[in-house]
Length: 66
Image 1: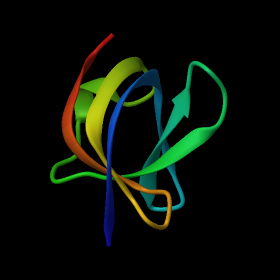
Image 2 (image 1 turned 135 degrees about the vertical axis):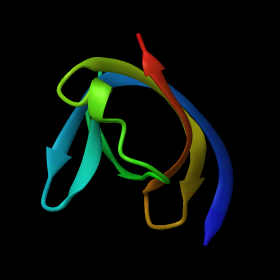
Image 3 (image 1 turned 90 degrees about the vertical axis):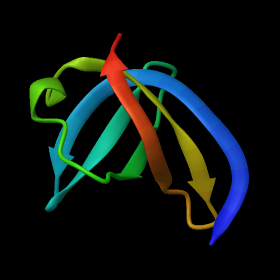
């Protein structure tokens, strides 16, 4: 379920437990739901844009180098 909150965050894209998370620059982390694996951005600083779900995950609409 999507809660509708737009997310635009920067941080490090990290592979974790068979998926990906964003280690946010401002602290904390977001588990990510990605449509495709952004291989070129893994373990690098990125900007993530998407929608927050009710369970705290982000449905990612875009990933780019930050």
